Image (cartoon, rainbow, N blue to C red; front, top):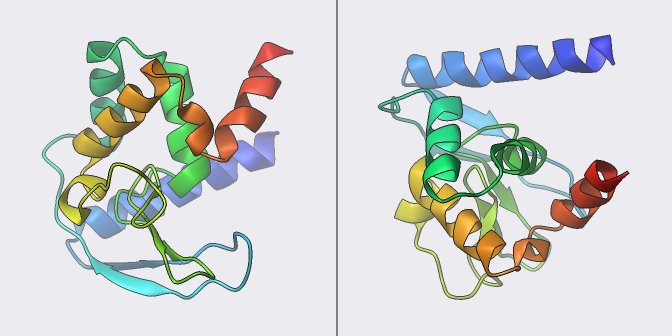
Length: 145
């Protein structure tokens, strides 16, 4: 557990440094099949990512710990995360909102915005649609034990 926490800290530090430097952050992740690495230009956020996640979830009255866990599992808190799926669709942003399968459609400007994508998640959570995030049922099962 100690090594996992250290790894999470290092990954988060890497993301924060990439964002702070305003450079190009490259990230790919294995999901269901081979993943392509896609470059995304990054801009400095107005407030720390964790603060935005916490603030939005509190405003939307969604459990903050759920928001944090799902955001970590989906993108490792990377608001610029992009994963090209085998069907050519894209999971985008901190909440990995798919550009084809997520209805209603969420534009890139929202998917790559921490605040907007967290509000999309909060709305789905309140409508009992958090299962749209494949990691959620697994997380819920772990928390219920």
